[in-house]
Amino acid sequence: MCADTPRTLIFHVDINSCYTSCEKLLDPSIGNRPVLVLSNNDGCIISLDAAAKDLGFIMGQPWFTVQEKAKELGVVVRSSNYELYGDISHRVMLLLESYAQEFEQYSIDEAFLTITASLPQARVLARRIKEDLARRVGVPVCVGVAASKTLAKLANRTAKKIPALRGVCVWDALPPQRVDALLSTLPAGEIWGVGSRGAQKLAGMGILSVKDLKEASLGLIRKRFSVVLMRTVLELRGVRAIELEPERVFKDQMMYSRSFSDPVTSEDTMRQVLSIYAQRASGRLAKSGQVAGLVSAFCSTSRYAAGGFVRADVQVKLPAPTADPIILTQACAQLLERATFGAVRYAKAGVVVSDLTPAGATALLDPFALSHETRDIAGLVHSIKEKCGPRSLGVGYGGLAQSPAWEMKREMLSRRGTTHWAELPVAVIK
Image (cartoon, rainbow, N blue to C red; front, side, top):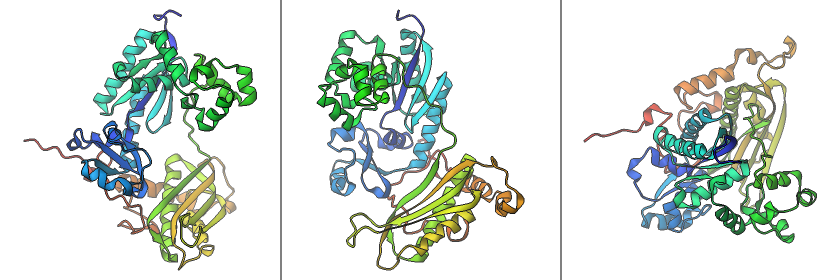
């Protein structure tokens, strides 16, 4: 096909070092210093920029093992600020969707778009998207363009690895000899959807590189693996075999689970935990317009606890589908009867709501309907918290104005400067 002929292309857009880029966005004082972002309870490194990688830091390193090194080297360290990252992601996705004929948000920091364009037009458009996101949102991205999702992901990876491409790679516009060199040197396990286990099995068949996988027999791949990997092979050949998936509005279940900064040993404290978690799950249901027919709750010690691993759980079938925070809290409180308190040091707890359906989808006869449901307490509480803040209102043990001692430790948390008036960035003009 001629390069100037319009065709349907897949654009893969990925925010570079998403969490660290969001941190730099609202704190110009960081400048060119390297940045690390830590996991829940400041446990380990979950995001780092190129400068931090150059200093030898790696993903997953426990924070306590590199804390002194980071201090000596002047590294900027932040606790994970998921509210900030989620809001920046939302702004990015809204802008990307405006460019697309079809759109799929794949994760918090990446998305697929389908756009009809010639190869020269695609290169111009990819650069426009990159510049538009830098100007209107403030985050750096790379853009990969190809005939299939798998190749678009590979093109994005190439855009990151080759500085001369300046963050944009149109796969079919690359010189054939460069494409052949890339496919010959890249291990098959690096391809999206293959993974380490698949790579080991492929290696046993003599398929080591991406080029080997691309040229493998479709029948053999389907027989030895699955139709999924066969589609990946087709995608490597430029055949669109994995379609974009529209966002699922209604999920099968929702979980709210966190580790504690301080172990929980008393029944009263665990009651407080379950109450807060149940009400947060209720808020998520209200936000998505869903109700739950089943609620589960659990608490557990660390798997490395001195006395051995201890876990307690309960599953409660609700009398009718609901998002009501009071009913969910009462159901979760049944866990207290199964847990042991005193000597056991619980490190984590969680609430799972499942058997989800759209709110109002099933009409119940009056004798079976929950009286609270007609009052929409979940929606009311959620709307108040949206306007006045997450700690503005709570029910019973969940009505706390201050953070309890057991909540996640985030000692280096940055401001939520895009979602909270009190934490807006301040510009000083001199």
